[in-house]
Length: 435
Ligand code: ACO
Image (cartoon, rainbow, N blue to C red):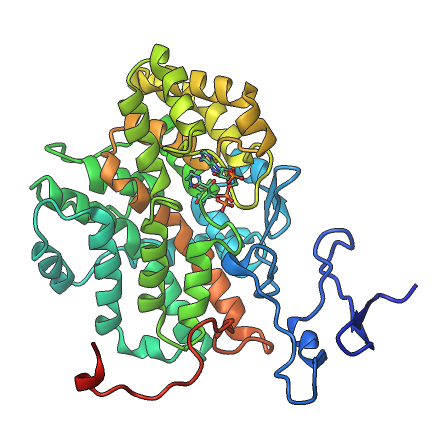
């Protein structure tokens, strides 16, 4: 049988053969080209058939080799490697290298990458001054979005996006400086002096130092918490064509520089339906307040008054594998920090929801945000900074996808079509004739 679709246009009786092509899996990722529909016309003067797909429910906007999700089976892989193996065996910088470069680094490559990132963690002193202009209660995500955009003015050479070496330099800078900006945003919000990066610490340990160091001469991160933060960063490094990554690709497709493109992606991440969800999960658990009030809350969710934050996903119609890893890792954190009392509410909420037909029939399972917030809070991170903690590692995914987009000969400036539903042409009405 040929790999094609035979379409008969009943308006004209005309028959069309649309080729079917595949990604690497024949049963996952078979596609026709949207542009092939254009030749299907009701009459010779027709524009041709469009496919209408609000919110890209069933439209692939690119080919990508970065991440793979099988939402029905709850599978997530970066560059082919299962997320479970990376979470167990890798650390964030090694995973970021994998995501960005496509292969696990050789020992010398890893050492060079770690050295590069470690030596780009400082920000220009003017960036510090820029950040001081924010009000003390500015949301750290607003600060991050604006400050990353401001970096664009410090590195004008970044506009040369087609030159691979220049491009890589900005990749290193962004991966390295995001934790510094995030920590400075936090310290600013609580009126504490900024802590400069410590080059002797690892990526996650240095971030903990910049966040929490007070009077110690030397901050020594707790080993378990440093490891857990590494895992959290690994789990958030990439998630294929989600809202923020699509924003990164769309803005980057106009050949804007990577700083403003990352700022756009971070802005998309800020929303409560995306990276802002873990913050909302915490607020929801606090609002529920105790296990006995869960049934009442679920009732309101089922009545459509509220959404159960941290539940549901556009792609996963099964347990999010990242949520499973976090659920299993949570006790290690609580051994160090003491138990977060919200955990009992979360576990019971999950149990009740997973037995309830409303959630079962809609295939609504916990997503990564359901447990990440509880862990972050136990580690001492304030709720406002949760989406920022998401942005720090996701920048490697955004940049990997951005580079892939720039190198893909099929990609052009992103420009969807629309179905026009407004007025037909009409004549301008003078003000005196408008009743
Ligand atoms: N609570 C209650 N009902 C829900 C939830 C939820 N969290 N999520 C989806 N539903 C219901 C919808 O109301 C809809 O019901 P209906 O068929 O009766 O109308 C059905 O499930 C399908 O949901 P959609 O909204 O069509 O699913 P969509 O793919 O558009 O949304 C999303 C996915 C945005 C993640 C949604 O599930 C949601 O808002 N969840 C809560 C926010 C959240 O946790 N976001 C984090 C996502 S993960 C991430 O970004 C890292």
